[in-house]
Image (cartoon, rainbow, N blue to C red; front, side, top):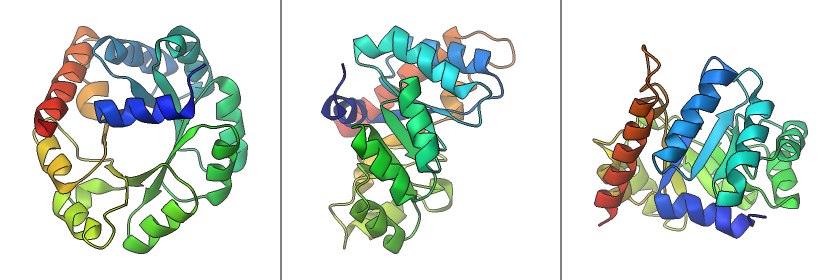
Length: 215
């Protein structure tokens, strides 16, 4: 069984969390498997994906023993948190702060990545017990916002989600984030022809960019 410490370490060590938000369970599963082949060690299947819990269950069964962190996204309340953990998720991600969701995750030792936008929300999220603060939506702020916030809050474990690409990951890490949320640049790389080898290569490109940014 993968522990919470191991799950959190996988996210911080690779510096990436893949956000899988797609229109079908079949595509979400295929993209996730291709991304894992490319080196992704942590991913979230958003609950907006049809049959998301089934996708989470399949991925957990296939890859959990290998230390891949399989999580659920858009987990808005305690009930959803329990359902996701029961399906095999050991990571819960939300776009907002819901203390009851974080409490449920902590009860079952699942990692939490909880959304915040302002300094007040960031502090409230840390106080509620979240492991990582998801800076969302990050595309409206940029790395300079992180640098500004971390001046008075250097302890804040921030992860931007939105607008992250291989071209700008260095700026994010230079600003002080612990990881980045990566989305369509990887998850939609197979479109329109369904060549999932492109997803694998896109995942490798992002992870290589993160490694170089941290060097």
